[in-house]
Image (cartoon, rainbow, N blue to C red; front, side):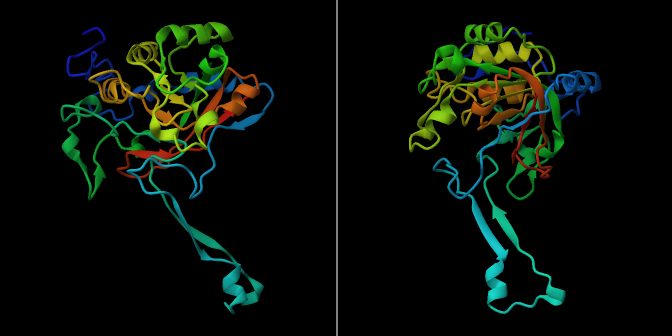
Length: 303
């Protein structure tokens, strides 16, 4: 196949390494690299039983980019209803509520149908199968299933001595230095989590969505060629923004479309770093929303 490069158009040009690898009908992509043996090995990493949440709290105050609506949370039944005279048969009372939110909000995972080019999704499925009325016919979030794997924290924030500034590219050399720092190597079936320090330093800022540090294309291909099952980061889009000249979301195009690798965005990784964890059991399950391009996620690291 072709070696990784960047076309004059700025689109990532890489061999479609994962296309057809697990059959022409596959819609799960790189998560196929996690089998029963990999799950058993990941579970054997549990030593203390400590469980660390990697999710941001969700509320109407959760930041969203300008083109998305904020989360809306409505109470359908609450204590005020009973104060106003609602019936309470046998003394029974209850509360319930409704949530409306963009699926690409806070801590979430991108489905393989989220980004593409040349009218083809991962594995060659046609983008015409994504319709506003029915959702995605192929590679939607409900096709991913649970993610249970060895998690590996690559802490480039610690490597840098503090949070990376806006636009800084996390390179292959930085990833290699981060894995050397912890004495653990990236291997097939891993879920690799990248800590840049962006979320913990900028989430409360109005500039949070102005850009971010993140992976460059070469580093993304390096992860894919090592057989990483999914990659996550403590920023909003995994990759460095602003993009290199002439390119638009090159890492999204490469990992989602070419390698079938889900992207986990908006992770809260400071507690994991504070615990001194580098290798752990990673557990997360997207909501099986038929035809959806993403799902909110509440991932955990179990030490």
